[in-house]
Image (cartoon, rainbow, N blue to C red; front, side, top):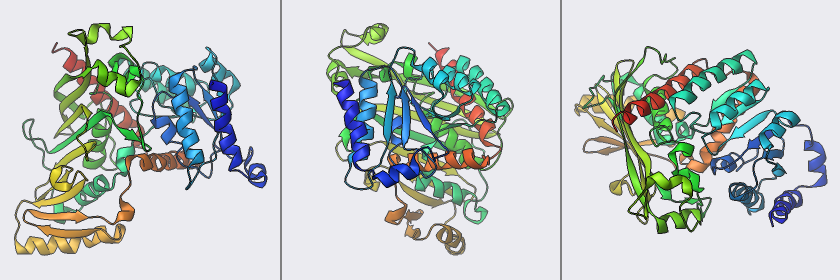
Amino acid sequence: MFLSMLAIVVMSCQSDTKPSEEASTANSKAVKLITLDPGHFHAALVQKTMYNDVDSVVYVYAPEGNDLKLHLDRINSYNSRAESSTKWKEELYTGGDFFEKLIAEKKGNVIVLSGNNQKKTDYILQSLQNGFNVFADKPMVIDTKGFENLKTAFDVAAKNNLLLYDIMTERFEINTILQRELSMIPEIFGEQEKGTTDNPAITKESVHHFYKYVSGSVLTRPAWFMDVSQQGEGIVDVMTHLVDLVQWECFPGQTIDYTKDIAIDKARRWTTNMSLSEFKAITKLDSFPSYFATNIIKDSLLQVYCNGEINYQLKGVHAKTSVIWNYKAPDGTGDTHYSIMRGTKANLVIKQGKEENYKAVLYIETIKNDAAFQTIVEQQFSKISAKFPGVELYKIAKGWSIKLPEKLVEGHESHFARVTDNFLEYLKNKNMPAWEVPNMLAKYYTTTKALEIALKKK
């Protein structure tokens, strides 16, 4: 069954590709992808589109099993869709020594990592030591021990002239982009407030759901996704995105030194409880695996430490990031995001609640809403309109909401192509901004140090 499924994947690619296309593309692309143990659906989303410099043949090294099957099913769905079909050809190796085989054969030059996080940092380090570039899904580390290995990994990457980069999709969400752009217009935003622990200058909160749809189907999650020793706790997993955005928005283009620019004030973690029937619905398993033994309460409820909150200071600016996982979103809703940047002249707020029809909306909420300031905002907003055609201001009682043209509104899945394009440009032109590496270290220092503090509160 497994081999027949593989044949379907390969045949679907071949049927959409003309011989002349095969001849012109074979062995001609500078980038050859290797997918390593793709246990998370983000690995497939990297391949939801084709890229000019990337070979259509992708080498997959992974243990045989359901994680791999689901990955191949997703690639096949992209290859066989009616519009904008892809032409990927997946070549597999599923032996128990799959990682050693990957290193020895060296069939590609970029390793894509998105799966079980327990071994991810070791995979990253060893891949770089053996001459591979690494394009890794978040989180690259899930604890302080992993952070030390990550520091070594970046040293190895620099020494070997290799690229190590993580997949920060949320930088490509249009409301977040505009929030950042507006914060850099002092006539509108003023200066960034410093805030306090109780009233942070910047807050980012996200709510996620275990039961969700991806590429039109209910997502089947591997059981280990709910095991924090393998996936990582919420405070080091999804929190990575929020901490990244705080850095990216508050200090655009600036280097952050984790040894002196970050102070964790407090951090906490808590569980979401999942019944066996809920677990079955998203994993297709009839029972909890044995590694959950210490996380089962009342014989039938699985406790998952997927929620977390960090209050910290970044270069003297007080920030709060929060991640919450519920089991399933109410009908008509989905994952949501809330963000506020507080300035001396206006607050920039992203809301995604009932009032917004559960669609993200950016607001400019003014501190002093007089006629003179209104004129200034409307004049200065022309800088945004020129850079993002079709974006408009809409007057409301507290200030303005931002209206977006449909062409600028993309879903989360589309952002993977954006990040991949960035990675490919950096790989080709060796032009990754100098602040990216220190800021990746700063981000993972923040999440892992916060977890260390939260764990001490047991």
